[in-house]
Length: 327
Image (cartoon, rainbow, N blue to C red; front, side, top):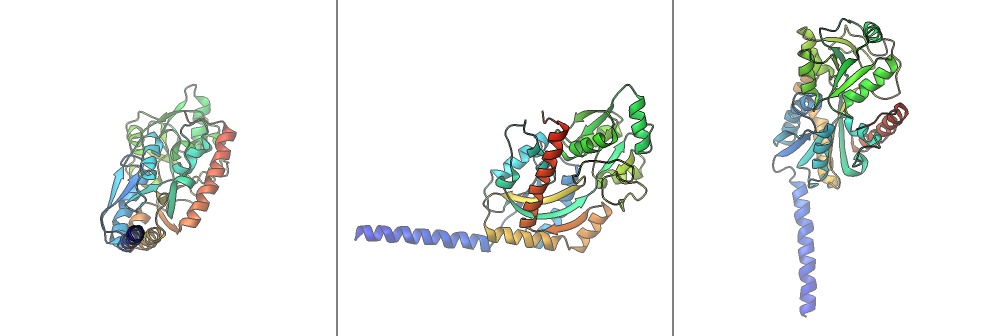
């Protein structure tokens, strides 16, 4: 009889656990959500995340707090999210730096976004802008290439960090254009841009939304953008292709996507996907993104996972063929 009661107690407790878990999923979210950005304030991902978090919070009827966890070109923030409880309350807004790092086989520890995260939704894209300091005597990519070849001193290029999107996209453009530069990695795009404005470095590659107001104020110059078409925000600036630069077959734009820790409940993931999709239709958000040259582009978790896999393959091929090192 005691054995029977013991078995029944275990069954009741197990059943109660299932009900409790289901109730938690049904009530999600019931408290504030953290949206981690793996870079410091002022960069492209941070800018997008802070604007998007407002619309997402309205859709979820809950507060969404952006948390900057910078260092190691995004890796510290990514691993913090990957090791968090998979309950939907710690999420990550990431960019294509996430698919670039796996191509560097010399970096330890290895990192695999396909196995360490739950892909939630693809959210938006934005071109990058090839920017130079006002002290650089070049107003086009053709003139920059000529300047590079004529000078015995290498131009300095400020990236958002080793293995960052800005560094790797520049490596693609640099290889295609035949420009020699000395790379200087920063802890995020914000500090890199600050030093460009101050004239401490010659070049950097921010997103167009970060560059636009600085170009308008004539604090820096923009020579090309990385989109497939000219940027509506910078219509006077040619694309890399229009500037006559051939390059490897990789996507040179920023993309922004939301991920969570591996093992998130399907019901919570589905709620977040719907919330992202609805938030991207918010008229106020759409207007703000348009002004910053960010294009909303929703895709669900399955499509995001496929894109991540394809981008890892393409970037790895370029990194290996170019002999690039992560250290």
